[in-house]
Image 1 (cartoon, rainbow, N blue to C red):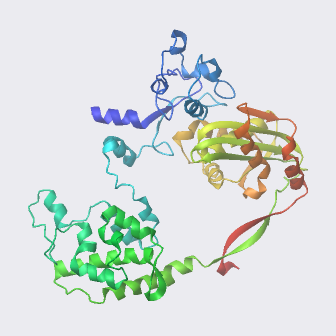
Image 2 (cartoon, rainbow, N blue to C red):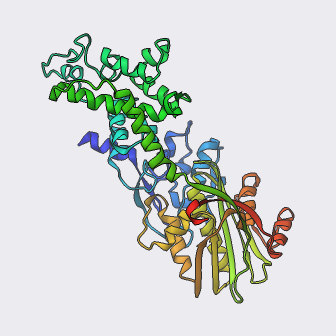
Image 3 (cartoon, rainbow, N blue to C red):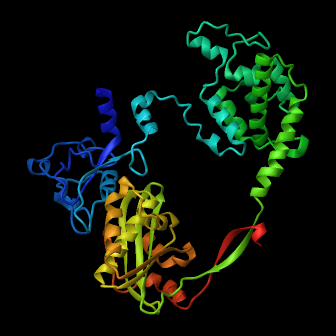
Length: 459
């Protein structure tokens, strides 16, 4: 139970409400844990007693009250920690290691093992390999030494003979069964692996899998990519070996040819039909809202994911003319959170302008889908989500929809402009000079070319 408490404390954090009485320095409310662990030196008595709510304002965090300069990475982390700006909210728990703030066993297991976790658990590339799902599963088991070989069973104290049952020459490990057994070596040579390829023949298991996955070579028969042939070869070697050991079957002397035939079938029947697309150019433009409606375009941007992030937005009338705009520097967060932050700022701005009928456009479809799904929950950004949902109720009519990036250029410009601004938040009554050309192009209905992939069957 003590170990479980330690893991829970390490993996969880508090999403703070506007009236949070949690200690600013010692509370577990940031991505990095308690702030006191991230800074050095003493705190004066007054500052040591601060609660989180003491540094909140109606527009964000007020860190100017602190008598010393925080490390830049700590300051950016605090600024990117959301809290309610519209409602009061309340403190709620979230799981720090999950993008949606919900507990997951995998991250808890990683925290339990800490630095002692096996480095082999980095083979996530296997799930992106261009091969059959069952072969991906098999490769994953190989990468983690979880195949029931005799060598593995012997190490676990099961008292079995660890010799290879086919060649009787070496310990039956994953690598021996799939590469080093004398019978298997002949199959690899028939597939074109030269005896002089020292990396192939001498690498350890992890290096061997990665090396073959990254290979740019082709197999002579059929000019097939080796990184596609290799998984099929592993799978067929394993099946043939099991047939020989457990069912007394003779090894297939034409196994290499069978592998090539399977890869060709997979390539032409599974891969190529998926790739039968062509590229076409589509004209995209910003569209004016209907008469009596106002349009809000917002965007979020980050230099990395996560990285230094900002957001921006612009409000325009039915003629496409500027009503208001904003740019906010957020801090260190992901592009998804930056998009949500931008939407909240835009809705706050539109609410203050007493707009009745509002069209909202974003180029982040994931965010649009969030608000089209009333059941969506995300503990990691719950303060922003709750604010946005409450703000949407303030308008008599509201629509939210996705647009292409080329139709969202003004909001994108303001979001990227936030990276270089001195203030955390700037509200624009008049458009900045550098954005005027983009605004005029939108008003004029100028099309911008976008390259789109279209299925051949749809052309």
